[in-house]
Image (cartoon, one colour):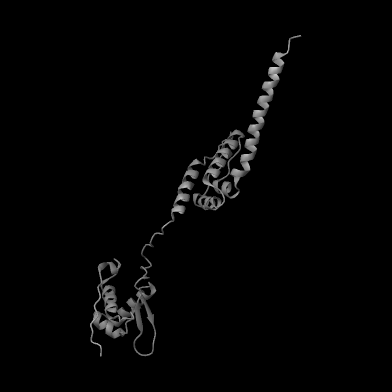
Length: 220
């Protein structure tokens, strides 16, 4: 018979702050009864006697541990089950706040870019006083991430400025941000604006040449 004693070290960090004394005692007991295979065969009455509480209290606590992922219970023939502590994958109480997710550097960068884009998107108010609201920021953020898979932040920002200028010049309402992004309005609006600008410049040059020619002609 192997009489070798096994010792374990349990620190306060092993216990969630909201655990009561019974939960701490039972968890410590299960851990101390673990064999090299990390399993406990103690019966409910034995656990209740060692924890100095009722059988029902042990059953309720074991059920709570199992639901929260603290332990696993494997049924077997006889009066006892196999109880194992989930050491690395122990979950918190359902009422506890979930651990925050860590964003990747690229995701953080896109979030910062979107904030710049959102601030720059200024709805145009037409002469009648009408103006379309920017809409849902959350939805716009989702649409921005989709757009960023195909287009750069600079490209979207340049298109936005052209779009806003074009709407203001032509007394036209701007759409909400999510529509602007999903329909890629920065691409639709850029070409007409440039065309209008080039045409206007061409007309000005033509008029200047005509005036110059007319001015050099001798008076009759």
